[in-house]
Length: 378
Image 1 (cartoon, rainbow, N blue to C red):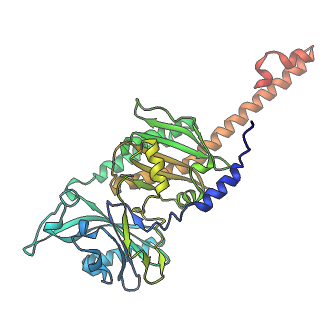
Image 2: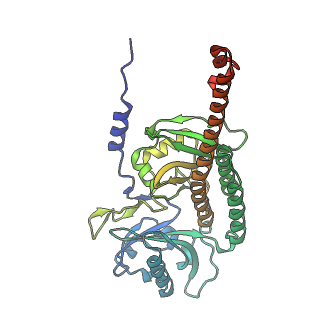
Image 3: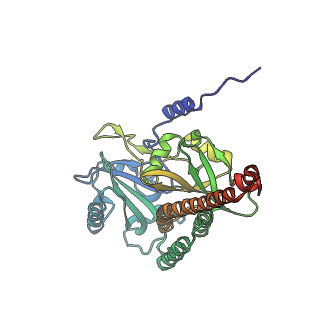
């Protein structure tokens, strides 16, 4: 009995329509705190339900309060000025917050000093961005005594960019890009994934631990990455999931009280993970991942995707240099593609010229077409 024909185009449309609003999950990953602020007065409108763990303050105690209950005025002014200069981009700043000593988790907080009142300084990477409805402030705990060496990261980035720019061959270039990303992140596997005109994908380069099976050359249907996910990647932001199976944290309240709508977390680093994605990564044996979009002429050309078999958190500085490297790859990619196409055209024209010349000199036209044998195939 014959199998019914499957309309993959229709299937893709159906899946995209049924896919949840992934930019409005109402959930965040648990390794940080998220606050939604009214821009006019910096009143806290929504908070993630893990402020007690990270800040020693219950979510209900923060709602309706000004941001000054957490940050000193100097830090608030720095955030506001940075937001103005960043425009629609995300602005980063390191901040410190006084946290009750008995609530400071040794895993996340490393106080640099304490006061007689029982509070200590906890340090965070602060990321702030503007959305239509509110400002989104994300706080990721850091250890100031175990920070990343900026000069070392800068030196690594310079060397990686130089190596990429010196590589003319496209295949070698992409393989080197995967290798460099694996070098700085330490992920088990990094592969370069290219979309075709129908949004199907193919792994065209990879760097991995030796014992892992290769994904090189594998093809995936367009449904593998639904259109809403591709739309978010096309906005140019990397995606980092340090621990995919981790229990996610809800926002309180679930809707913005000013708009009565869910908060747009499309560009939030802490944005929660859809259940379908959790299952997808579980089936692949992936516990942590990092995805860098590669944008060409405003379009999503492909992804640099990193997988790890255990939980793995990448500090902001490492993510930032990876993001810059992804942008360099996108910039250099056009040159490599154009160079390779030009070489191919020159090769074809040389073959054509030689072919025409041999026909003109041959006594037997049929022999000129056939011999040497590879000529027509070339």
